[in-house]
Amino acid sequence: MILTDLSATWDGDLALSASGDLALVEPGTGKAYQRLIRTLFTNPDAMELHPDFGAGIGSWEGQTFGQSQAQALQSLVYQNVLGDPDITDPEVSVDIVNPSLVSVTVSYLDAVTGQPSTFSFGVGA
Image (tube, rainbow, N blue to C red; front, side, top):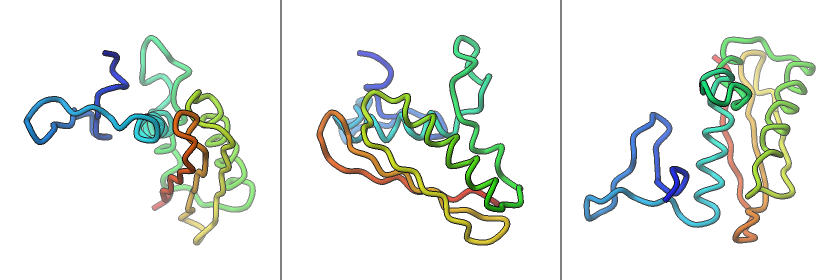
């Protein structure tokens, strides 16, 4: 079993099943979703053996967002989503809620199940 088969929360803890065993991530969509979170919210250089891994979304906290910053964030997210083999036809939108907050939505097809999925999160103060 490889690590991506185990269900893990963002804070790094492994999830447990109802019987107390280590929980496995749901086939297909669950695996892609979990990898999306890991890829987008891991800071570059955080993984010693893979220094180029991670988009570092957390580094955008506290910024003032204008159109150029929103476009740069959209491009960063899109480039990181493209690298996932279980995600096809990704679309990324970044909407400015106010100058200190943006809403990011990633829509994609799960390549394993063919099911459409959406992942949304806010970035800002």
